Picture: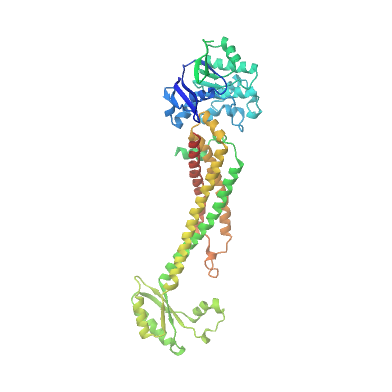
Length: 225
Length: 297
């Protein structure tokens, strides 16, 4: 589904990592961990085409990401739901419209999707906050809204960058449960986190692989959880 | 065609993805309004100059004046002789001596209405109209010189040409002004669009993140700027047309300046300005958006 083959990435002349290979099979669940600055976010961006590798090859849905034009890249983004640590909302739009943004930009009418939208907001526990503006939301609500936005087009892959970075333990458990549910629905999940407690908590819920970036290399951190 | 339909009809949801931005909105409205206002006057000037150039070249090209400078006792005889020569001259359609009242009317602007012409040594004027293909002015002058010594032929060429040239140059200046106004408006709207695109870089990033195509993002900006330019120019044109309409009507006394307006169906021409402004804004914003989105890619 998504495959990085011997990829390397240089930042302003310095090498962040090189010769990393990873393959996200359909329906798999991966955690990506490592120290701050190791390149977790960069690796995620390589997966959804926000960055192109300086060496090696990144492939998504059997297409070389480097060769995609901007329209093809937009279609790729619709198949990969992304949850950022800082969520990235349009602050002038209410939560419901932010969540529906992927529908809006893909030309799908919101009226036809009202039922799905309501169901999704209930699923993430935001049905009573739909008219709030993003700055009015708590950290956990923002993360859940970002997750709802990432999955509204029912993408094949969901990539989350530190989704529990700004929330308390209870909320991180709730977010984890949502991600696990999505995985049980057949979605491919890749979560970057430095929260080892979260990874351990996932042990009983899902069969996940843990990848660790250290010393510019990607390693499998032990057996399946 | 589909893109044009989308642009006109819009998409209420898509229009909301770009936050309203006060500064660029006001700049676009003001620039397009002011430019449209100026454009109305440039158009009025251009059309009036064109009319004057046409009228002078058409009306005066086929007319000439014969002036009989003769002593009072010979004036009538020389006038008759000159009229006879003109009747015989091929290419002269008609010739007639101006009456004393007509000559007085010509002098009235300088000497007043009560000028006693009979006490002044005023030459007799003969108005002649040229036929197609025209007369031989040199030959006529030589014959008049021989048979009517006091006759002087003035075919208006001497003063008609610079006037017509000036009117044509004025019309050209009007057209150049309209082009420059359009260019200046395009430049201002490009600046405003660039400012809006730069201010919304984060919005663009979010839209791309959720799968928006560049054409969708560009359209959100282009539609907004096009509609602003259209509405601003409509207001500018309305004020401009009001200004032109309030100008004094064309009159003989006022000359060229009082004729600085639109006539007949040409009153409809300024209505094209808002549409052209919208087109200029559409092109300028599309180019700016493409470049900016390319840079951000």
